[in-house]
Image (cartoon, rainbow, N blue to C red):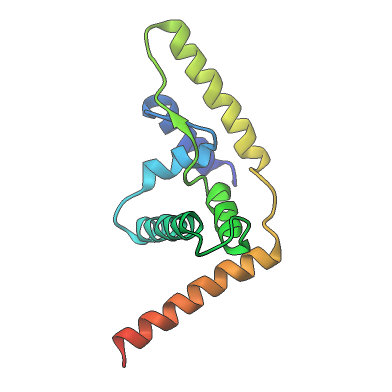
Length: 142
């Protein structure tokens, strides 16, 4: 039963997906992104990554800061910010190549992507959320 969602998502990508990413989760995510809770969380995570990237760029954080590394690992695990391209479609060979690529991605997806994130990294990302919620609460409820 665990294979139904990935198979349906990959079928949708096979029939109409417009990009191919290094991480197929990014392609699946693109199908379901929007203004709902998932879209809000995704935009927030991308904004957090931007903040870390800029802090490192201006020297406010060291390039090897564990927070930036953990967030990057989470985003990679979720398929966010994965490199992608728009495949060229010109005939049966190019369509066959796209189907082959998607089939290989489906195999990887069924086998599980990436490894388990370290507990310390999960704790750090969780702490970001807790601190952010506390800060927002203080702003909203003085």
